[in-house]
Length: 328
Image 1 (tube, helix red, strand yellow):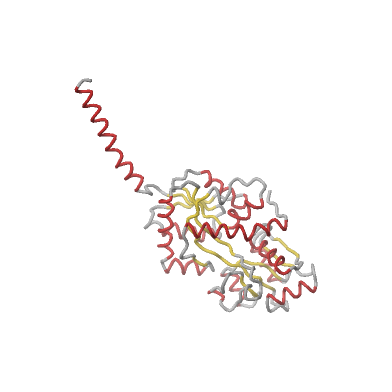
Image 2 (tube, rainbow, N blue to C red):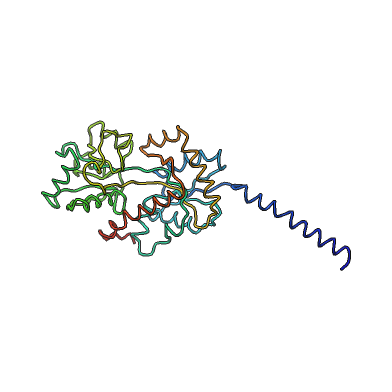
């Protein structure tokens, strides 16, 4: 071999070796471009109310996070898009009970498996529900409603935000736990259900606890009887939980969490989780969420988020199967 060939080979090897540290350094510099956070619902809803403030607070931790709304099919279109994305940490999902629990169980051919196809990062917030009644109704407690339903099977009804919503499933969970027959009246959204409740068109409704619902309760336009959180919520500490009312299995919460495509490196997952915990430590962020009646999950982690999701599956799958819910 000629000397110049030996030199060329040596320089070539040196160049290759020199590239290794730079490649490792580049990989360690995640993120080096904007991160895309997919919200699988239209702008303006609860998911946006969580995702956009979270994205704003990530600027000092992860750089630019672009929120992209991909609505459709109960959130499954956006969730499926993230499941198919490159597992490089640059595409994340703001997922919740609908796309991550209800749709996969109630759909014959779901386009993704929420347990198998995603890496949980953190549960950001949870939001309980309440059984609310029109003030003209005689019910002063959850027990009163259950007693009335048992004495008059099929005579009492409750409104929900629609078939397949957590509101609907929570109402069915109540019926299952109490062995009662209460008629489900589905609406196209929470707003119309609340409107009819206030007008006295329906006697009760399973409603999300929002600032609007709390204000309606305080002004006497509706009466909250119980909350479905594991413990009393700060925004309505005078309202007992359904568990306190004698129904230990009556726990139901909406949630919004962060998920990445399966195969995303563990180091990246942990980096995003650390940044999220730092944001949750900010008092103004927690207060912003609390003002929207959302409870921040300040101690979430990838492992806890996975357990939370598995627990939600265990809670709702029997309910969905029992009522024969089909969304396809």
